[in-house]
Amino acid sequence: MASNYSLAILAFLFCFVSPSLSALVQEQPLVLKYHNGILLKGNITVNLIWYGKFTPIQRSVIVDFINSLNSKRAPLPSTSSWWKTTEMYRGGSSSLIVGHQILHEELTLGKILKNQHLIALASKTHFSVDSINVVLTAKDVAVDGFCMSRCGTHGSTKSGSGRGTYIWVGNSDLQCPGQCAWPFHQPLYGPQTPPLVAPNGDVGVDGMIINLATLLANTVTNPFNSGYFQGPPTAPLEAVSACTGIFGSGSYPGNPGRVLVDKVTGASYNAYGVNGRKYMLPAMWDPKSSACKTLV
Image: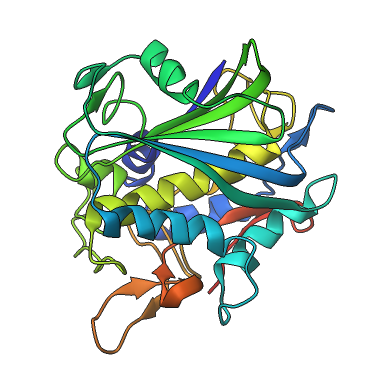
């Protein structure tokens, strides 16, 4: 069963709430209930399946992001300090390590994919309970529901090699950057605030980072629809999807909040990563405070 994550629908709904009203809404406690299931803890291998053409620079931005999640080399506010919030969920830390990478540039399944195609691609490397297989689709690849109801998805499946989890994230650059790469592109609906400058100079890939970050956190804290979530298991609010649209303090619908700005490039970010990278990461629900927590 897959759990869809969509910036589009939530952003659409929230854009019509005034800042003063949203402040009142935010005062209400947000509780993600633990449903007594397995969480992904300990060393977790992240296998990457690249479907379509990604440049070496685009791939390095995403690989560096995953490597940043457990690295202590970056200054604060760091990507690893953002990820550390997942330790507050039961069971301790989740250390993500990049495993196999499969380049699938020939598009043998075509340029229009359905859910079964995503699972088939995720199956290119074996499933296990201590791994996450991530399918990343290029900007010219359409996926069922992409831009209409979701920016990515995570789920679980059983195969001959065992039970495991998978994630899909698409590059929205050509298809719906206003929905799946906000705040680096003007939103499709609501207040037309100026977009922020993407920290890695690539609106599509920097948008993928936001969605991948969301889905990695959601996966380790709710891998089999029996972990932390609010609402029905078929459409749950999870660790980060419960905090959609929040990137810095003082955020309100249509405004990502106060973030850091590079004095040279003008790019906006809120986290440092390895190899001098800068990223924009969404707020994550903090079990201790029962609130959405930002880095800045």
